[in-house]
Amino acid sequence: MLICTKGGAESNSFVTLEEADDYILKLPDDPDPWFALAPWQKEYRLQLAAQLLNMFPFIGERSYRNQNLAFPRTCTNHEIPEEVKETQVFLAYSVVHRGLALRGVDVTQGEKDRVTQISLAGLLMVSTAGLSQSVRSSFLDQMLNSAQFPVFIRLSRWMTKIRARVVRDPNSSPKLTTTTTV
Image 1: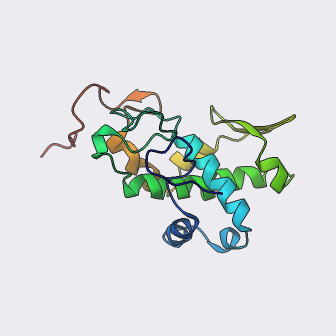
Image 2: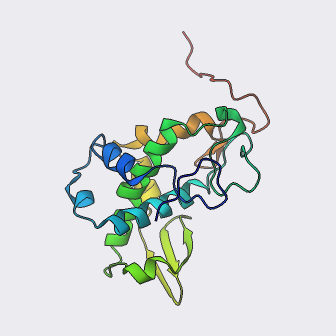
């Protein structure tokens, strides 16, 4: 079950299942495989995508003591930006769903409750109780090099680093800046 309480200690998603279905229709990918999934399978992918988002270096601080997810943050006026929700759905479908499909073994409903770790350090790896499956392809690199990169890069406004390059000092003001000169 998705728990979408803003700043909640038990929250596991930024978006509801209904919101995710709406966002999927805005992506350039074919939405049919997403809509063919059972609701628990969609929720599982969304939960893993929210965990992935927690790994990124964002500016500002979490807004609430003991909040489980990376957003809301002090630099977002304690709100969850639409870009974060869109990116969670993008990651759930374009990265996690495809990564799980390449495992060759479908995740069972019981297995989804036993996920112990998810890693995206050069490859997608999902560890469950007693089982660890790796996909030897860097989905993050594929995503960053794809035509869908603008969907992901929308988070750059709140990030301190992208691809190990410093975007801004995490202690600096979250004002929007540009490197474009006229």
